[in-house]
Length: 167
Image (cartoon, rainbow, N blue to C red; front, side, top):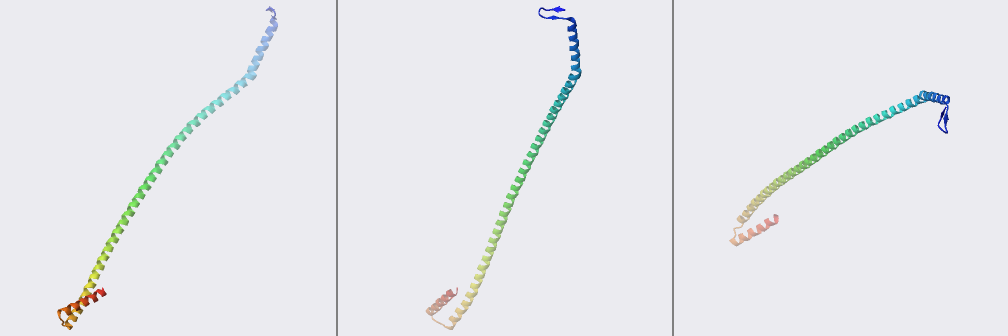
């Protein structure tokens, strides 16, 4: 027996308790610690799998984001090219329409000038015909009457007044 003052221990009890403690420790280790450690190991592996899966997903998401940005940039560039082509085509069409309108205007002016020249020539021709017929008429009247100079002047003035009324 060991005596520590207020506490005294007996060797048999101490040895029995130590053996029971070791047996209980072995039992706990065998029956409880094995499954607990197995569960903890499974949990650790599960967490590691989730972390690696999350990292893969993050990398995949970054790749998808980069791809979407590239596609968006391409779409923007394509839409800008389409708008530029449409603007150029519109300005080309406008220039073409203006050129056609100017050409049509020039043709119309040329046609109008030609028509005016024809009308002037026609009027001159008609005037010549009328003057010719009037001259013949005047000559015949003058020949019919041989008058003195004052009478001839009076006849010509009357004739010209009549011609003026007809024109």
